[in-house]
Image (tube, rainbow, N blue to C red; front, side, top):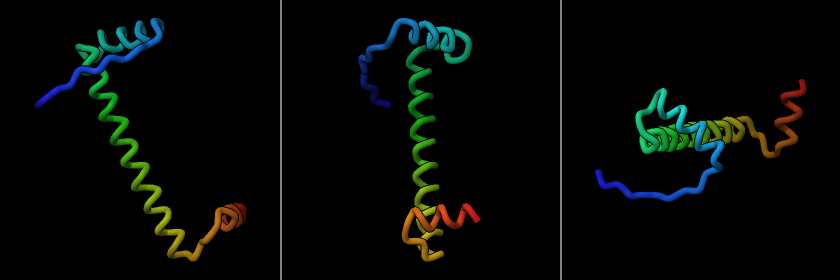
Length: 75
């Protein structure tokens, strides 16, 4: 797998916390950030699918505004 090197600036206190997590669970900073990135991408994908599904349900129910959603939820 081809890799790219990234340079990022982090607050020293945050970096210390990351290093504790790395030492306890991940082995390297690179592995920590790889897993963090994968987790975030998967989370974004799940949210995207949820919004798409919600939009379809709303469309099938004839909902055309946020106010209609609030009205349904307040019943």
